[in-house]
Image 1: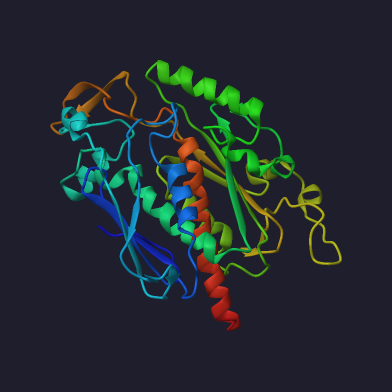
Image 2: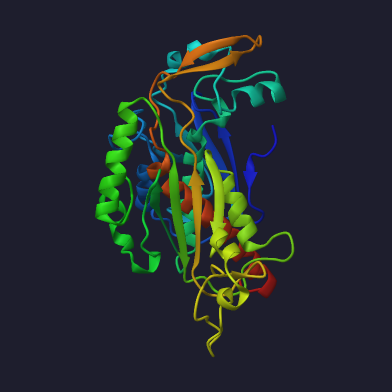
Length: 356
């Protein structure tokens, strides 16, 4: 199986399955001399871990990280950072009923057709449990990028949308509620909607908005390694993501060029930022902001018609512990993937300018 690594200079390779002994990763290319804040890493892991509130899966995992290499006395050495996260609360029997059944909108069918074998316990390698490894690497990348600030938050759950611009929000309020929306009224409505859907045994999707600030001009490469293209790839690699838009996004397609152009100030900043902080695939120093759309979780507790490995039409029903809405736990994952992209381009820029 290829495709287990992300990044060029700051590279993460992950391993493990949802119901295996452990998941883990290797971070290669992290510069030496970074004094790590392990509490910050733990905090990001706690934001992603299951069982943190009533509106997420009740699987109980401490998600403690054990580091095996690349760190000496709390400081990165420049060598590969190896780590594992033990799986401690699997209930594999919850999946025995789908051993030979393909769940709708899951990776069951495609994995079986590609590899001829699949780990049906929680989806195996296709499980979102793998994203815990990304959060570890992203938390370290953030500390390498201490001047760049990355904040993500829930901006929509189903049809409930936060209309306030990120510029008018207080990011300190993101963690004030379990849905991670920095607006109390919208958060209350989102939580109630998730609880309503969960009671019916169904699921619902939503949107995570991410803002990257204090980005210097010059990050990104033409033609195929554009900054926004790599951010898009990073986000679309996250489980359940169905859409990515940055800057004006799809609304920009409805505008005239005379209205959409970001006019310059004398210092090189722009009067508007419909470009989303990226022009020609390269950062221009303005805020980078984008939206990531997540589909409803595919596993529902309602009965569904599907097929089995023999091609027979059968009826199945989801069992076990699943998120009614993945969006609240996806917030730190979006931040982590954004941090990996920014770390990669920062190292590339340093290499280009020989600013080490």
